[in-house]
Length: 366
Image 1 (tube, one colour):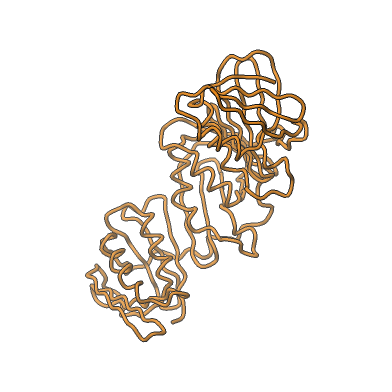
Image 2 (cartoon, helix red, strand yellow):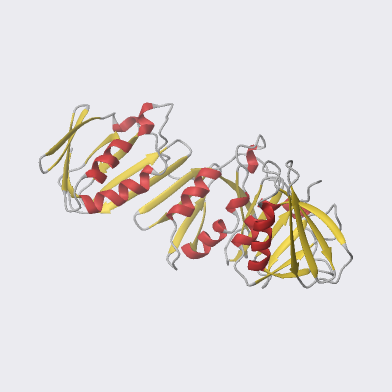
């Protein structure tokens, strides 16, 4: 196997596939990338057995061959070379020689046939969706995923597909984020799959904010998302996502309407003196007024007052302020609408346009 390629073409491809390669691996071959040379392209693949990325560079090459090279070292070499460098890779036996100008690097290789790639997906549901819309779905919900929760099905994001809607839902048991997009699909029965946290993070990194379409395939165990020159495959979490519809409160008769940015700034200031571990803030609702109170074990206190539109009963309710701030950071409308029916109920937070997104934060005892 031997090929020559410009650094500016190889480096972006290496940066993409290195995203899924973990520094510490149980299997040595998972520290490597699979390089496949064909007559019209060079393909690079990386995997950690959960998420797999495959990208290709269109170019003419002599012959066909494949091998695996150390992912991190090859990327570091490529980064350290000058911008206009030409890189030649030649593999003989279990060694690869990487040369550029007067630089030479000898790397160890492992057999390509041992590289664990996912095969073609069988009996997959397939549909297309614009990158911009799919990325927005993930962006607006991913922050609410759990991290290393024993309820493993919460350590990911639910994608729910029926004939008219593609929905993303994430929850860690204390808060929930939901986002819909209208989609006309020819699907016989509704489908729910849970994409693991790492897969969601990689997709957010890779997707662009444009109208180009991505093709999504979903099988029993995998989801595959492909667009020109790039193919992403992830295992699915095998588990049943909780019935999220039961925890979304009804929109009440006495909503709180507030300027999103002013509310976010007030809560940010109040949070400075909240308990660092529990992040609790008391919200006091009065006629057209919202007060945020925080205190900590050092007996320090913060109080913020904000004018809002509210005509309901006076109420005091505690929240983890970080959860409120996360939701307010994701919402982009000028005003937000919040509904709280009583001190023991969850808070429903909606963008001003009330379209497509819903955020729920559970109360906490303070």
